[in-house]
Length: 493
Image (cartoon, rainbow, N blue to C red):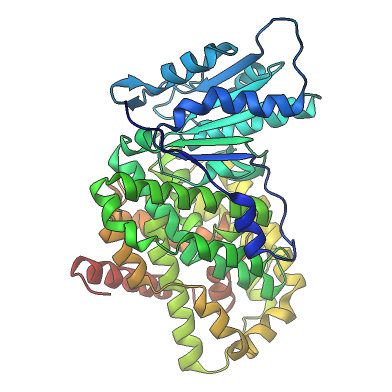
């Protein structure tokens, strides 16, 4: 029998060190348990949290627990992890398992599934979610709905792969009119990441998790840029400081992730968990979601519109990060070479009717009914209004670029460096590496139109305002990204 080597990660000391003046929101996770044999403490962890919320009833009845899962079998040394969890919970609780299935090859966070999960959670003392990031997102919304009705069950999430960082935050990604949107949900009380289970996950999932990690090398710059132009007031230097501690040993585990080394996978698991916490305490996903995520969401929309399965989110984000860094590098180079630049006139860049036509033309490819286009226009039109309001500030930023260049440059890792790290981890470096029918035309469409889907200001929006996002400019960014990927293939940074 393997020894129990799980550990309860100390969240609060890390937060105090990075946020000494307590500017960030509190973390709602009470236990973050990572390591070998961590599954063995699930029942105990639920009991401990329940005991802090309500006194023992003395009735002799076992508290009721809802176990949420999808149909996918997850193994640990030949055993079905969901059966193991249910058996362990059954020693202490009355357990009912709900298998969520929307009839697709992969589960989506849609209203019918959320309704079923919420019904399963209603009236329960606890909800235990076992599976990937989708199940985690569904469970958080189910518990949120129960709380709105007056009683919030304890939520324990069992992480089964190091593929995403969404297990440890307080938001969920839902599918709304064919478009992925991030919405507030709730913190899990306990997250259990058994590294024995995660080490047995398909290698492509853990490599995708490494791809997800690379957004920390591009997204904070987009977040800071949005704060400088005034469209996002949430930027926090302390959140970025906390994030910087997460990736300290990221590159040292890259080759281990490629080989499936348990210690490397455990390091990746911890880094992803802490990333999720950063999102939660920062109060916005913008800290880790910029251009690279927009590109991934664009691909998801296209594949959903064609009735095709979506690719692994983290894998798409990793390849998108190489492109995002390339866009930043083009901006840095042009502002250095061209001297003072001018933002295009308001009537040319922010005309609502012109913007709407552009959005409809871009997303007609996804859905001929224009349902997706209408949803994207709702968000993009709000961004246009915010940009128009802050227009003088945007020109002032460009005029005084030298004051901000250094800070922004420090927040962006070179595209070649990101590509090299992905290559060492065996993760996708190019979107074409993903093998999901992503041809050059689809790549170009996703990159060229990524700013049109969301109300979030990024480097692409600034490039558009400067007149530097025409077809030839998009081609240059893709050429830069391709050069970074080729250098990674050759073992050069």
